[in-house]
Amino acid sequence: MQDSRRNFLKKSAVVAGAAAVGSTAMAMSNKTKSNTGSNGVIVGQSPKKEIIYKKTAVWEEYYKQAL
Image 1 (tube, rainbow, N blue to C red):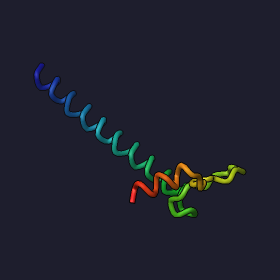
Image 2: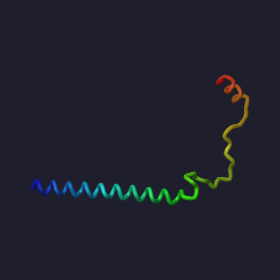
Image 3: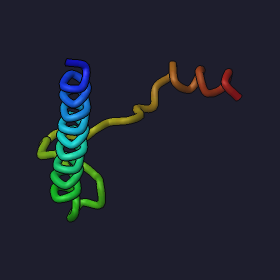
């Protein structure tokens, strides 16, 4: 009884480990295929221009105090 229980646990651990390694490898291969041309940078299709900084009096006051 104990031997069959131990064998079942050993086999299930091996199967679970193999499934985890297989799914990780598949996920990594899909990720590298999609980023091969963009060098890891995601390029969007948004028509809007991203504004990172807009010069205002509040920002000027902040920068004066930060220095």
